[in-house]
Every structure is written in structure tokens, then in C-alpha cells.
Image 1 (cartoon, rainbow, N blue to C red):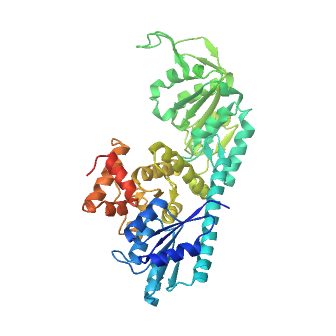
Image 2 (image 1 turned 90 degrees about the vertical axis):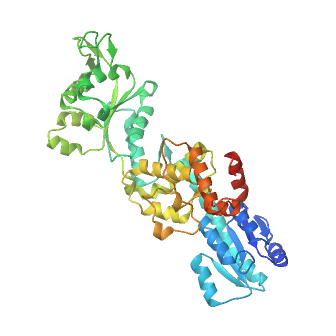
Length: 456
């Protein structure tokens, strides 16, 4: 027997609830019932069931209104509406709103069992798929990288093959594709892994300071050189030097770098004595090196020295099949980081992410999911939790969707959460149940958050 499937039944007639619960009771299914729509909705938010049975006509809130609320919370929930007042128009409206089935009262027990059994099989299949996704995520990790696409498998295989033998390597690929992770993997799998892994961001170094930064200097070499200083090459002796954005390195420094790679020795600025170094050099760039060579912006001989081993990191658009794994990986991280229970994305949020072109690649995906994880108070990230640039307000707008807040790096996570709670309470006129529905959380969780932030 697999994981327990949860079912919530809501009907204002207690005898109907007893009949449904007794008819469907079996091993592997947890049944929750309520004759009050408000309590029933709270059960849905708290228990997050896979299946919900709803009476169509109830006091305080109709089944269609509850259906709207449930679909806004999680469109993946299978909802069956039950009614003694069947009309074709209502049935069509229910299906359009997201219901998966529509049953007439008095309920036929064999028909109910048959429909629910099919939904149980589907729910268990989805649960098994989630388990397989978790297992797949574990087997798809490689030195801090995540991927199971052919392009990533090929990259991982190439890293394994060359790591033990390379002396210099060039990593090329778009911004945000994890070139630094590839460099770190080369270092970790090489004989130099016991040494330092030293990073130099070439785009952040002032042109006049490149030589002293890389090769060091001796006392008196220039004004302000009051003592000898070791350069990055010497500091990385026995390890690896990672030259990020090497395309921004000046031509004069490129020539000296080439000599260091050829001779494995450096000369500090102001000195005439070379010093032997044993350093593996990994360079990375997001620019077209061949075009730079043609425009005399990059030395061809340095390129051939570095590109004895050349690795290319694919863009996220080229490996969209890795998107679900990356989403799961980042959500697990942010769930732990923010102290939240985040179990995944709603189907419509997954669709929005799958349709995006991801010009910023994995780094953009990390930023988007970090934003959404900070904004949400629910266990599932929805479209309204995503940054404004990814949202499609007209297509996805729902009556109960929470207003999004643009994160401010100067504001803490607690401040964001307090702001969301305060705004929801204001919109609900102080009604805690309504505020909880707006935020797609249970009333118990709403009360806990209000007490946490001393909100009244």
C-alpha cells in the first residue's frame, strides 16, 4: 500500500456524510468530513487532500463558490459535486470551473465508489511520480549541478574524463548557466582538489591592477607598495585558479598570462626573479571568443592554450526537460532557508514557468523561485506568487488571489510576511477566515501567524 490519499467530504446533511464516509472507508485513504462549508474549506487548506466531495446547495456558501476557492488554492485537486437539483447548465458550469465529475442525489453507492476508485488510482499514480521525482533528483546531482538531459549528461561525462588530466581549461556559455559550478567540479575531481580553489572575476578588476592582482608585487614596486604581496597565482599554488569573465582581461595581461601558462612561473611586479608555481587554470566567458579573436580583442594563442579542454554549458532553454528537477531542488532549498513548508508548484504555475524562455537561465530560475517562496504563505507556489514579469494577470486572475508584493532586498522575510498578512486582513475587513482564504492557508495557520506578529 502506498502513501495515504486524503479525501474531504462537505455536505450540510450529516446523514449523507455518514453514508459517503462509510461507503468509501478503506485502507490507504483518510476521510475528513464537515457539514459546515467554512470548516470544510479550512479542512481543504489544512489537509491538502487529493479528492474533495462537495454538496452543491449549502447554507452560507454554495458548492460552486467552494469549488472556486479550492481551484484557486490548488487546481490539481479532484472535486466531485453532488446535488439533488441536477441541471445541464449547472453541470457544464461546474466542469468549466474545474470540477472533475458531477453526481446526482440520492447517490448511487456503486457509482460513487467507481468514480472515487478511479480518482484514487490517479492520485496514487501522481504520488508515485513525486516519489520517483525525489529519487531522480538524488541521482541527477553532480558536484552541485542538477540535470538529466542529454546535454547535461554529456557535460558531466566530459568533466569526469578531463578532470584528472587538464592543466588549463576554457568554459563557455551564456550568463547564469553555472560555469562557476563546472570550474569547481573540475577542481574537486582533479589531483589539485587538496589545494585552494581561487577565483578572480576579471570584469571586477581595474585594468591597471591586473598584473599586481594576479602575479603580486615586491616592496617599493610602485607608490603604496609598502610590503611584498603574493599574487593569486602563488596563492593558488597546488590548487586551481578560476579566471571568470576572462574576455574582459586586457591584451597586455593576456600576453603575460600566456607566458605563465607556458612556463608555470610568475614574476612579481618590480621583481626580476621568477617563481615556480603549480597551478591549474580554468577560464570562463559568456562571450564569443572566436569573434573577439577576429576583432583583435583576444589573443588567439592564449585561446588555443586554454581551449585544449573546452566545455560548453547549455542554456536552460536548451534543456527544458531539467526544469522540474531544478524547480524541486530550489524549492527544497528555499523551504529550508525560509522555514516554510513548500511542497511544490500548482499546475498553472508550472505551465507559466514552462512557457518562459529563461534568458537569465538557471540563475533567473533561482531568483524567480526565491521570490515566490518568500511571497507565498501557502504550501504550493501559485502564479500570483511569481514576479510580475512572469505573471499573466488577465489569464490567471482569480477572485481570491493574494496581491503580490515586490521584494525589497532591504526588507526582511519577516517584514514581507507581516505585510502580506496585514494586507489580507485589511481586504477581509478584519475577518480572519476570509483573510485565510485570500492567502490560501488554513484558519489555524492564520491565527498562528497573527500571534507570531502580534496582529489584531
